[in-house]
Amino acid sequence: MENITYCKIDSNLRKITLPENEKILGVYHDKNVTRKHFKMPRYYQDNDMSEFSIKVNYVNEDKETDCYAVDDMLSTEDYITFSWLVGATACRVPGMVGFVICFTKIDEESNITQEYNTELSVCRVLDGCELGKAIDSEQEKDIIAQFVKYLIKVDSTLSISGEAADAKVVGDWLKKIEETEENLKKSVSDGKTLLAEAITEKGIDTASGDSFATMAENVRKIQTTGYGVSGYIDTTIETSGGIFAIYGLYTVEEQEAS
View 1 (cartoon, one colour):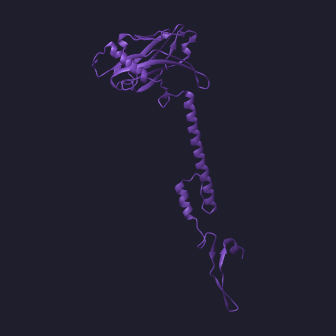
View 2 (spheres, rainbow, N blue to C red; view 1 turned 120 degrees about the vertical axis):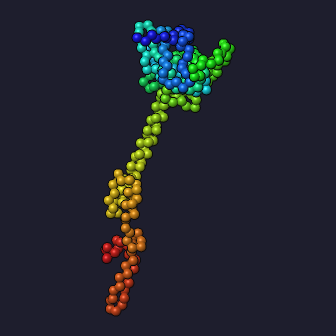
View 3 (cartoon, one colour; view 1 turned 180 degrees about the vertical axis):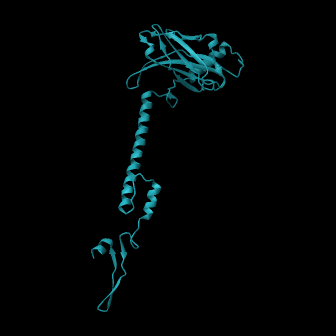
């Protein structure tokens, strides 16, 4: 069985204690190969932390932010454990990576009702196989200050103008997009049905499921009478008592009635 080393979270101070061998997240360009394991007391004040959703919010050396949604939380009577599979964003550039663990609880309408965050912690991504230049405590404090400035709470689905978008906002946006798409589809379908009926009435059988190219071709097949849409010139010449009679312009309805 794998011997797991845990990064421990103090639920009172919210501080993450990283063992020395857990301070390295990986090597430049790693992706989904390193897993960090965490352990903390199950209860914080009167809250059962096993009832919360967990994610890891982090920022890399280039100030790129991302998050990891935890999917392997386990609970015992006194503790909860979970892990972070370190993805590509964290290791996109060598250097320091700042992260916090965020616990949230939501209601039936996807509104966040409770949120718990740890203090910021810092790990390192190696440049190739070399550890690189060590940094002193003052440099580390400066880096942490920068991470605090740039780190935002990144939602696992979407961010809006640099701020987190909660699940309800995202859901509302997706619903509006779906409604707009459905309305557009219905409008096109209704339009094709009306067009197909009009072409069929002119004697060219056309189905609403036909393509626009087929409908356009059918329109070209519609024949008009004479030189006008509503009538024609009858140039029939008759004799009546030796006098020539020339019929003039008739509408279709008038000619059929005569």
